[in-house]
Amino acid sequence: MSHLDYSESSYRSPVHGRILANMPVRASWVDSESGEKVTAAGLTENVGENSTLVNLDVLPPVGSEVKLRIMQEEDGRNKSIIEVQTEVIRVERDPSKPLAALNVVQNLKKWKQVALTAAEQWVHRHWQLNYEEEWVN
Image 1 (tube, rainbow, N blue to C red):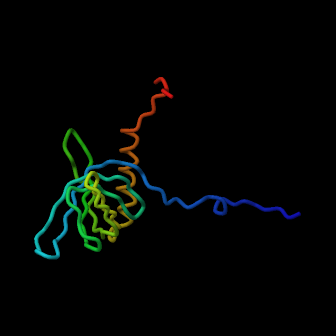
Image 2: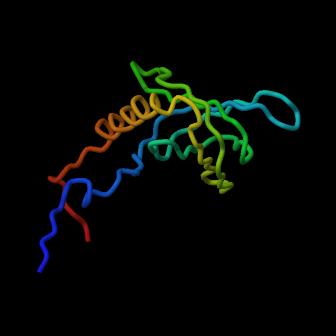
């Protein structure tokens, strides 16, 4: 009978999770047909290590380059915490919830440090478990 040693790297799955956080964003891109700059406001649905899913007022076309600015609420105002260049990899044109999946193409190291930390902080501020409430079945 053989003996297997479990090292930390052999049994831990890689972290590729997404943080469910609704942070305000501003996205801007150049319309390929008119050449005009389009700006849209929205919220993040989730934030990942190298991408994010955002709910925007206006959806950019798939493949377009989008400048994404994530904001953080401070004293009732939105303050920009990071601005990155992204690429649209998918859109969902649901009228009730239009979504764009954006892949970060520049400043990935800064994205991981700033955006993921801000998303974690958002979760800590907004998701509070209250075990004293009665459960309804």
